[in-house]
Length: 148
Image (cartoon, rainbow, N blue to C red; front, side, top):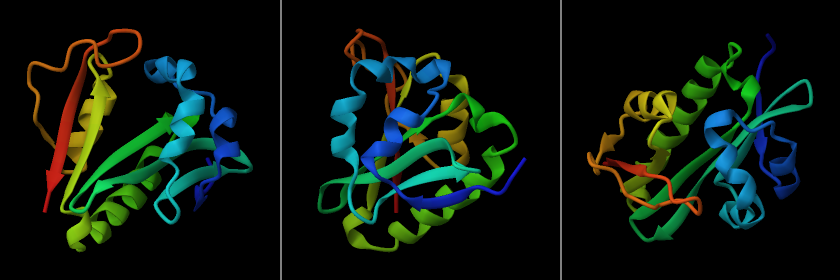
C-alpha cells in the first residue's frame, strides 16, 4: 500500500477510474458528471499513477453545495483511512465559510459502505424512505446532509 497523493482533478481522470461495482451506474452518465469539476473544489486520489477516485464539492447556490465521489474498486485496499482523513479535513475547512453552510450528498440505496461513510463524515440522513427513481436507471437513492 502506498501513500495517496491528492491532486487537483482534471476531467481526464474520470475515465481512468475502475469504478466500484456499487457505482457502476455512473458509466451511463460519466461524461455529464465532468460538469461537477469546480476549480479548487475537486480532487483526484492517486497511488503510483493509478486513479483511486475523484471527489469534490459543487456549489449549488450560496450556502448550499453538493458533495460527490466516484471511487475505484482499489479504494478499499487500505486507502480508506488516508482518504477519509483528507475528505474530513476538506469538509471541515469548507464549512467554516458561510457559502458552504449546507453540504449534501446522495447514496445509492444498497451501497452500504457509502451509507456508513456518510455517517462517519458527520452527515445526517434526510430521506429515511429514500428517493424513488433518482438515477437514470430508476434506482432509489438516499439524501444526506451536513449543516454547520
